[in-house]
Length: 135
Image (cartoon, rainbow, N blue to C red; front, side, top):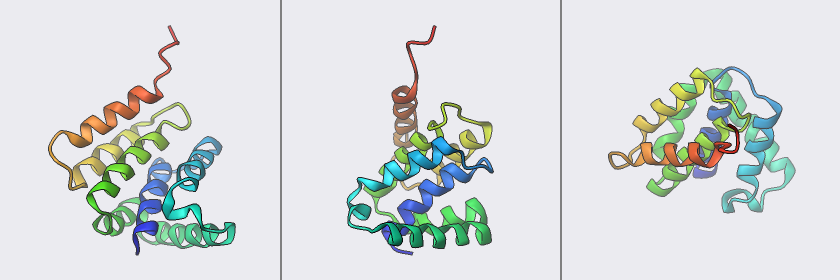
């Protein structure tokens, strides 16, 4: 697995961790990857091939196995970004399920980030996605 596959694997795991892939989540997943340098020059066919490979791994290994394979490939800054993207994707359908919360908590403990940094990232993404205009 290379870094592009690993980053996408974390994002896919975030949207798949609750056992369903909703329309809002699929759209958000695509949007989060499209503008990143790792994927910006990839064709539709190449992105399709990437997700075919990752979905195959997801079926074979499950969410935890996919994450376990992907994390060691990512650099420190890629892990930071992957956690932020995963948290953002968990909020994509405007509802964070118990499974998504558990996934983010476990993912944050698996990452090689300084103490407190993962929690700060999760708090920032939650604040970014909060609709504070709701009463």
